[in-house]
Length: 244
Image (cartoon, rainbow, N blue to C red; front, top):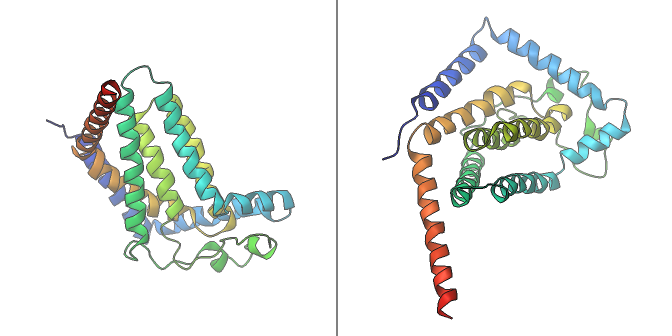
């Protein structure tokens, strides 16, 4: 029988409640807005006068980077499985569960407008914003959004980190955190998203997903089912080889 993890079930929704309340609160919202503006101006200043950084962050936000990010996450799990001394089938099942969950969540988010809120990106609000798209002509740069809350890329990055924290050790967790920050930075530097689009918008969605999947027996049930399926496939494969 699968166990419930009450901490993972109840703490994430409490954090989400606090984040949303603080963001909507008239007394605390100015603080969030101050953090948003300062973060944007700090990051946006990186690309104002440096063509090298301009091209670097333009490439970092290029659609091809989505494939590179996917490849990195695949390799991350591959090496985790490759160098594991025990429970390799279990780790393969955890990998399959992780990518199926990320794909499902992103598909649900992108297939409906329910999760998106009308909010102008920094480049549409701040008069001194530097528009990367005005100096880069070799690719389309996303530096404007009228529905910047939440960030799709941040949802993927934060989900990946959360799953790594659940399934892997401390060293891999630290690497995943560093990677996720880089994953989110291009849109923040270009001004397509505010910091709170990531922390509150994407973060709240990810926390609720983690609560429902890792706080309940759902994740264990799916991983166990995948592990049994892998074991059955290997058994049938070995049987077919031996019968030839």
